[in-house]
Amino acid sequence: MASVRPWEDSALQAEGVDAVVQITRRFPVPREEVFSAWTEPELFRQWFTPPDGISPSAELDVRPGGMYRITMKPRGLPGPTYVVGTYLEVLPPERLVYTFGWELPPREDLWRYEDLRDLEDLDRRLEDVENVNSRVTVQFHDLGDSTEVSVTHERLATQNLRAFHLWGWQNSLDKLADVL
Image 1: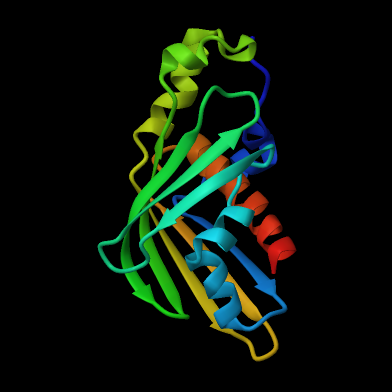
Image 2: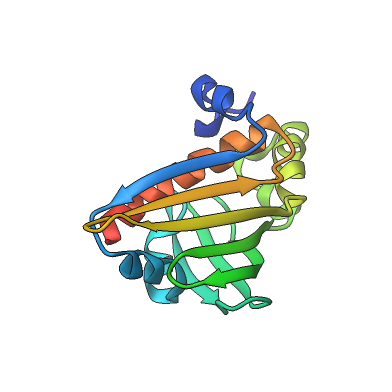
């Protein structure tokens, strides 16, 4: 039997019942500085990382119709995974809207890892992630001496996907606070 993943925690699963993932954080820096952390590749890769790994590269073409590709190397998985998408709206320093999807290592590579050998469980865990074509809206609210960032992640089809992405956003925004 596979171990329970952090996003399978009952509290996160309960929050994942809502059709949309929403998370808001306040950062004690100007809005332009926070917006830059989302749009400059070197800054972005420092905080948008797996909780137990690294993001060695972030290719960001931050303009409507521009694409992005973030390389992520979670510990314990073969090769990289990628977060990919297209910017739909870019309104500096107020708003970003973009599609959000995943490219994962081949299943045969994943099967080599001990805790992923239950193929039925692996298929269940990966099927929804591989088919994610969701949308993220990030709003940057100027509060004078600080900035409120509001992330809305839509089009996540299952409760488990919503919990997984909520967990991911919580961890990423924690790291963003450290970068800022």
